[in-house]
Length: 250
Image 1 (cartoon, rainbow, N blue to C red):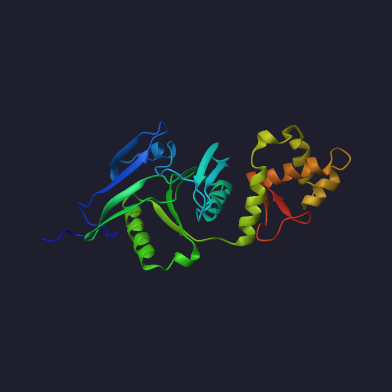
Image 2: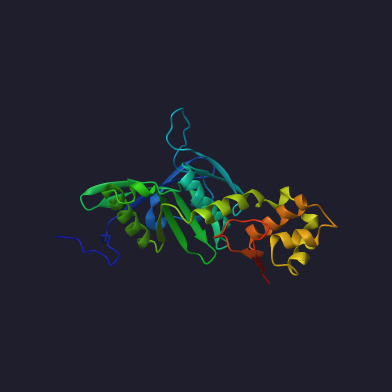
């Protein structure tokens, strides 16, 4: 007798196992329905990262200000998506290679490690797979996407496939990320910068207004940090410079 299918496209009674790595490095295996997201975000990437000569992808670690720790990435495209997540004020947790999924897809056993897991301030969880544009229509890739989407839907999670964003926005966010850590800035000067921002409309205007109090090289990093943190809103669809306009967030 055939098993009934649920509305999200998975099969009732079908099990999906999840394996993740705790902060102490120990692997834990559980069922999808019993997975505790906080244990995943507080753990380590489930997959080991390897660096070797001739590797096609550029791997590394990025210090995410959102979570205050290093987040691993396996390609520069994946790093770009992590940067956007770190910049997004609605994201409160970021985990890379968060877990290994295994389950049936019809007659086939599928196994997959998504690239990212994001937790949002409203409690929503988003699982992200990052793929180069050239691979987005590969039948094997689209089949993997479809299965992962159904698995995520079972938990009420969102699922995103990402192959890149507006290149100007991505590069602006990449640049702003250099000013994301307040402990590396002269934050004692921040009140004066914020006060000047309330009277000005451009980055250059703030620098000119404070020219008698502090050098430009002290002002610009603080302004860029305020944009990164969301205290100032700027149009990142255009290249940034002295003429960049902004709005002060009340």
